[in-house]
Image (cartoon, rainbow, N blue to C red; front, side, top):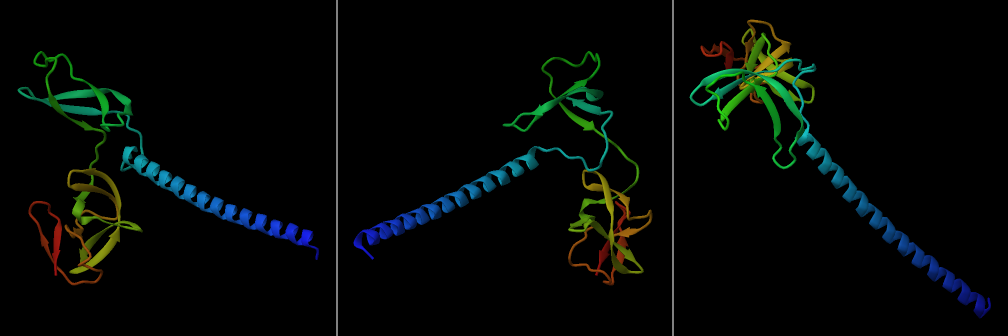
Length: 204
């Protein structure tokens, strides 16, 4: 091999090595950009989860009624007439306009506390502490023949510390008011009916 050919091939090898290092650097840069984009996607999904308003059940809110408690006047019935479609990004608050009628006791600048009822129902309800949420959906623990039994349910509306049960329970079922991992299927318990809720609180 002549010296000129050797120099030519050595230069080609150096060029190939430089291109390889540049490609490695480009790969590292692409991976870093990918990680950055993924972090941005997770942040956007987190923000979306914070601003997205979801309902406990499918349906359309066709009517909204409101009760407004005004200092010195007590409770006044009103009707929601306008809901702003935008939520303030900084305060995360939205605007609702409520028609209160022509009560002469209402004055400009008065302050009140309002409660808006978006829906209502009449059915079975259990304490929120009785509902367990797992990968297979919500469940409750019931007592049959002094034995614990886990039962899958379908929940509905939630109000305060109570949750509506649409499927999975019958009127008269004994429900463990405070469910937890300390009770398992088949455990022997002595149910005690509480006077306040008329539900059951199992004790081992």
